[in-house]
Length: 432
Image 1 (tube, rainbow, N blue to C red):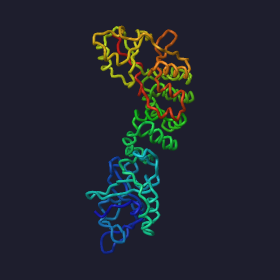
Image 2 (cartoon, one colour; image 1 turned 135 degrees about the vertical axis):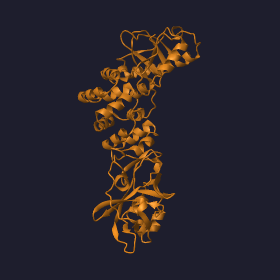
Image 3 (cartoon, rainbow, N blue to C red; image 1 turned 180 degrees about the vertical axis):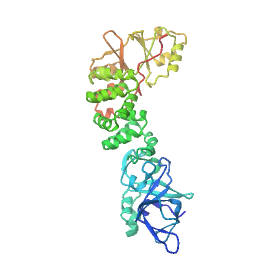
Image 4 (cartoon, rainbow, N blue to C red; image 1 turned 60 degrees about the vertical axis):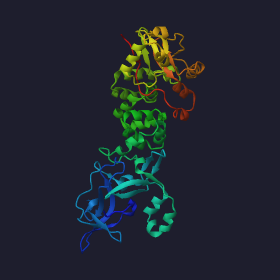
């Protein structure tokens, strides 16, 4: 193969000629493209030339050699128009000077150049150059002052740790190259990166993620960033993400929107029961137990045995990850007591729930202030506290992380881990 290892910028601008004694000039190299940008180290499939007839492309395999003067010798003149933007990623047009996420470094940087390598006869993109050397190379320092360029430290990111965030062609490539890589980041790290971007780029990143990952990151974003992203995402996609958020965080987000936006988003949520719950939660003041609570909890009936209860929990497989406490209620959801998961697991299989439950329950009302909720959780060493109405029926629970959120600065609160992930909506273990 004609190409050797090096940098893409060293090939841009080179003259191309036809093979043969006449060596007829056909144009100059202006770009390269790949058809499968989501590969670990994507193969470069073609070259784009500037010709008298306009931009034309050739396959990389058409290059016979690069001669001593740096001229590309082609078997055939380029005769095809460049691939449509929805079929290929153009390395210069779509990536040079564009923002990317360094997944390992957990930061937003810009691509100054691309390192390429000839591996087993195939030309591949292997790294992004984000340093000064890349800029100097593009300015021609390699030809003018090669010794200077040699002394400049390299700053490369292996391509499998690169996640481009430009929406290069939405119908196919979009951010497929970045989706799985961004998903490796902790939600708070991903939120930090999203917070550094423009509203448009932030929406592109969020839009590239699966609903669950996007929801995880969304819960760590400031309210103003959330609103800006929602405006760019559109109601359908935003509703899908909101449906995967914890109910308390989703209600907080909706509460920051105007009534028209909120109504439009709620109408798009497919789970109508969840939409109704969110509509109710929005009505509570944000600095009260009602405003902090989530409807994601597991309730059980008192007449079941521990064995039957555990079996039912396995059967329903509640989505909520926070089931340290189980709430024992009657058929009207009046709270009778609580039982910890530890107690449930360590008790005899034949023991009845009503014999094991703790009836001395600490609870709060929906209008209890956030400070008082946090104080109750701290005083009694709780991981969550139930929120009850005037009849003693369950409205929801406030978890310790949400109580902390309410009394410490947003920047710190948004970086803390979350106990609950995604709505389980009052998961019930026993109606029979």
